[in-house]
Amino acid sequence: MCDFDKGGDTVTAIGLEATPQKCVFWVASNSSPEKEIGPFLESLLTKLYTIAFAKVSSKLMERENLIAKCINFAAPRIKKYRALLKNALKRCLDHLRTMENEDLTGLSEWLQRWESQQDPDLVLCRFAYDQRKSEPMRMLARLSTEPKYKSDRHAIRHSFGLVRHYIGRLGHHFRAADTLLSCVARLQEDLHDFEVRCIPRPPKSSIPTADGKTNLKSILVRMLPAKSPDHDRYQEALVEMDTKHHLSRDFLKNYKDSGWKARVHAEIQVLEHFHAGKLSFASGDPFIACSKPACFCCLLYFQHHPGDFVLPASHRKIYLNWRPPDAVPGDENSELCLRAIIDAMTKTIRRDALRQIEEKVPPKAWHPDSLTRITESAVLYDKIRESLDNDSACGSKEPLMESEHCGNSSWTRNDDLSSVFYADFSGSENGQTMPEACYSFEERSDESDGGVVL
Ligand SMILES: [Zn+2]
Image (cartoon, rainbow, N blue to C red):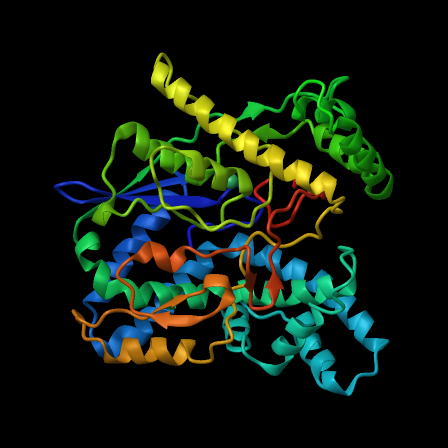
């Protein structure tokens, strides 16, 4: 809800600190959160607390108000989804005109409704949410996975997948609002007296410029032990991959954008803020929530950090402008700890890269770094409504939460919020295959946080 724009600047992470007086929501963003995200989060949490005590009869109206508030805040993001959806729709409709397939009856007409959409954001998002289980959406899911042997990012199946993805994203606010509302009764204690505090964003730093050693040959030498007997074998495979997939050209293209700056991602900012300040997590749960699944470097940073934080879900992309946080100046332990983490991360990345070279795996096709968030569970809305209708203002019922581990949607009554949000992206999300690791060379992703996928 706080990540109100696309492109990565507004990616938001939150950690809950328990203090004797109150619960503190520490919020960080890839850009500074003080101006917009912090105040919005505070007003959102206040609103949720009000809803917790609202009369049963007014809960549906409160839900509508909450959704309208969130959609209004996310106007920049929705505007971009509209434009991207339009582009993908055009390609799909052109393709469907060339097809004769009885199984796709009505799909073109349904897509044309989206193409001519001029409705206000709230109406559009509601329509997207209402249509998420419709037959045309199932057709799109099917078309986006066929034929599986083609991995070209320009294949038409990607356009079908994108249309489905953007519609899912447009309906997200309704879904997210319902999830929040289903938790309200359990959050009353945390929201009774809370404070939102923003973590100052670390400065961005320049990306090193390419030099005579920024080439595949030199990189391979640096990745292997001196005089490695495997060098020639890897070199041969790399040359073959470079000829086929233009790895060098695409890799060097990453260095030509002088506007790029390296930055510390939001979830790492929160992690280091809690670790350095020795803060206590609420309910003793060292979980850091983020508006997007973590990139591969953030995942490795969590994995190798001595703080024992809950591992985040990850889309496993690697961004060129990722950078680690700075060590605490003058603190030798902090410097040693940082070096140990980076060494361990490098070891894993090197191992995976060498394996990819050995297997001559081509660059992976683009995949979104946000979830489409459409489940096949047709009971979602009804269950939420039932939960809202039945809960009293101070209801003691535990909320219904939806977990999406490996895309299998199931309802759980969960005592540990972190496990609800911890999803393994190495599986799939309702048919959307998520690669195990993505070392592909691609253009800047329209869903990315400003980096490039390696
Ligand atoms: Zn990251």
